Amino acid sequence: MTADDDRIRWVELPGREPARVYVHGLGATSAPYFAEVATHPLLAGHRSLLIDLLGHGISDRPRGFDYSLESHADALAAALTSAGVGGAELIAHSMGGSVAIVLADRHPHLVSRLVLVDANLDPMPRTPGSGGSSGIAAYSEQEFLTDGWQEVRDRVGAHWWSTMRLTGREALHRSATQLVRGTVPTMRELLLGLEIPRTYLLPEADGPLPGADALTAAGVSVVPVPDCGHNIMLDNPQAFAHATATALADHGRP
View 1 (spheres, rainbow, N blue to C red):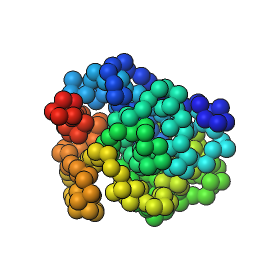
View 2: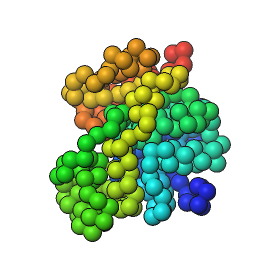
View 3: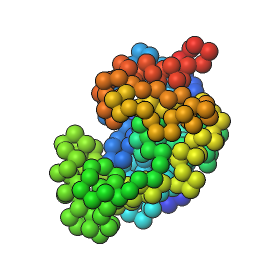
View 4: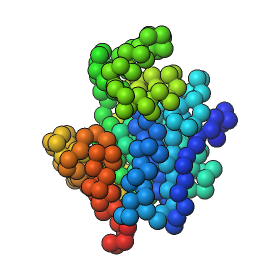
């Protein structure tokens, strides 16, 4: 619950500590995206929270919230604290990865490891007519609430819309707008400065990750995953589970 009594909700799987927290991307919800991999034999057995960010999925959708990455991170921190979670291993996709980086920077006691799944690290241009956050952010909020959401629905297709339709419309637009704006310092710069174990998973087909050399030099493991697109955990769950288990291994024990 936030200071304004808005509730973040999650699906919880029992198991041993440290807890693992799975965080979805823009217009998504964690259970459909992560349930298969969270229960995979390589990853099962830990207490796992498949959590929905404010405005998304089964969480509340306050219309007065600004949905900045910092505010998302602080709301997530309040939820994890209320759940008795500390030193968690975060597995976070896309926008959720950006939120996880900010969470680790602002609330370091809550995060012990990061596995970022094709996460946004840099500000992006607003691109009218494109899919995803850059296209959503190209609308003014009023344009999006009036007609733009229908255009986005038709562009993103049935799969993404099946969870995006659960997102509050103000939440969707503001989250996208804040994501393309990014943070100061940028998410990439924050990631470089963290001292916890960090892994970045990306689709192998996308080619080299921009700035990978600097990330590697700072101790971030950059891991290409074959046979997948942006939704790595859905497209190739076996390879995702293997890469994530390796990233979370402690002296060889996942």
